[in-house]
Length: 414
Image (cartoon, rainbow, N blue to C red; front, side, top):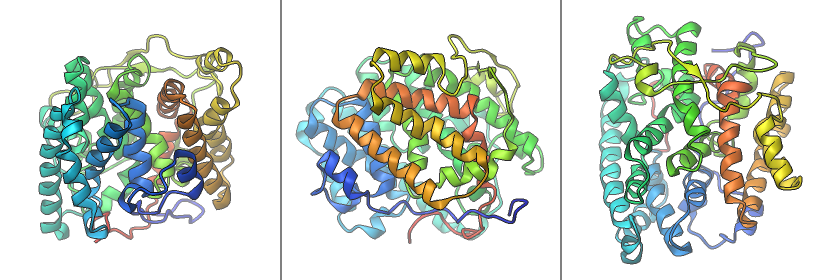
């Protein structure tokens, strides 16, 4: 598909681009093995682990090696000979297994890897029959698949052992699936991905598989309302911090091209100004038992005022005495993105500068120990992107302009 100006997206990337020398130096990871220094793995799994924290630096490194097993689905085992050795070694790591929740985390991660392998095998077996197809499943069936589809459910097991609420933790890790799949709607319409939780709703299946703008908006709103409390009231939870990484990952991973998606899809965004109506709902309120949207939601408690630099972000700036690093972070994940995208003029160099600026700013924040501030800002930037500036909605519609390079194929390195 192409937009009215004939502009298309590139087909989805593989995320294998190495991280920049600047980020390596800031974080002191120059000697890490290549599978741990890819853009997709580093900006996804490592930063998730850093926001959540660990018993000590050695355990943090081990946890990252375990969770990077998620990228088996991306074909890392075919690119890096040492990949599976690293993952299996750290699953067995005796010191890490002795930490609180470490054993449970690694045992569940092993089950997750088995599930991922089975999914990959199924996709490879039926690669020629999956393009342009979706499946109708019940809400309970889809939620179970969403939990394992997150690929990092070992983190959830550890959080539960650490006495985080079981129901909230499961919901937060489930939420990572729509948070991930919303960026892949266009690609997954055509490639041989087994399922996409936006496209596997009854709204699509009961519409003869026809994906309309109205259907996408209803499903988008349902998931957006479900994720709202995770990004606001629950921002301190491990699962919320994992979800907080999703937008930054899509910007930084050399795979999803979030900024290009957003600029191409921005004309489809529903504007709500000057004070957007932010709303929330539980997953079983937003979707019925058949996984059809209900349209139900309620006003979100303690919502920000929705300004570009909203009242809650300003409070953080004031509390930190105007720390320029926090202002940089908000610029790269909200203010700067909106200014670029809203102009509607593609500038590849500016897109690269925004992406690398966000990478360097996050690395600097970590190096200064600003984990709480970074966690809150990323959560709030995601909430803005879903319900305030709607960059995620723009990205979803922009993804429909995928160039079709993956039709009948799998979105991974073979």
